[in-house]
Image 1 (cartoon, rainbow, N blue to C red):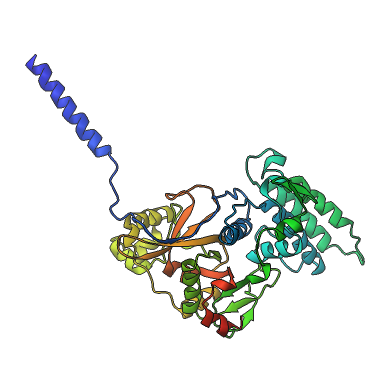
Image 2 (image 1 turned 120 degrees about the vertical axis):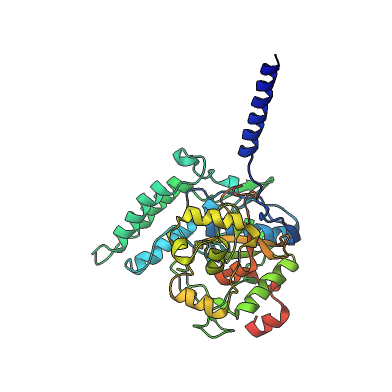
Length: 400
């Protein structure tokens, strides 16, 4: 009996030791956030398999603007904006005989132009995304595989004259995958057209301006940022980087949000909901790796190291020169649109922007990304903002 008890105790000890070994190791470097300022926003959406971050982020921005102005919550329809935008983009491609890009991407200006020129409808006034072709969310793979060759065939054909029937055909494709844009609909017991509905939202669409920061154009002038998805050539106000950041901070402090467009292809942008402007050389040292070894690591291994370093990841100090160099050498790319709506600090006092994504409630923070101010300063392409969110002294310098 003693032997049996002894063996039983030994087995229990062994099992406990095994369980202890399997227990996950707590990452003491995981950021712990304290909110400094958080502005009201609408719920997180999911763009799914579509290149429509520009659509989701900017409509989310206008939903937040309505919340601030009226206290009312709306769910505006991304499919309405996409339907109108892709037709207008196709018209430009045909006018230029195919000498420009037709693609899924876009900019905040596309949403603003739709609101001004066509209006908007609520989400439930059109078919739910993906429902027309048997999916549960957006899936643009087949949609664009059908639409892109169609637009190219029209734009590059050798005819001396084309008819307007190609627009009828393209509208059929748009309606088949996105749904028809309603001419009239009922919302909360009242009938609207898209234009009358947009007019009822309590916003002045002339209040919105785009801001950027580059040195290849003079500061305090406007220019169209030279990226392909800025196909409408909207004018952005060009200010020094420090003032660009001051505008974002002032907006958040005054209760506004910011429709942000920028680069998320950097190593420091994680799928867990964090973004750092990683100082690679300093990180190699902390990770016990020299440059040669670091470059040989797989992206997954590099990400694992960055995740383990967490809020202790060393960051570079962004500069105006860095922004310009990275833009000119193609490092700073126009990847993604998101919504900046707050400011937080981690346990070390480092400041982050709270940023709403459109990938559903993913990551460690259910659809919010915490992106450091250094990351935003370095990786911003441009952003749309209410001009009243800009400090008065800067508005004067910008001629607003």
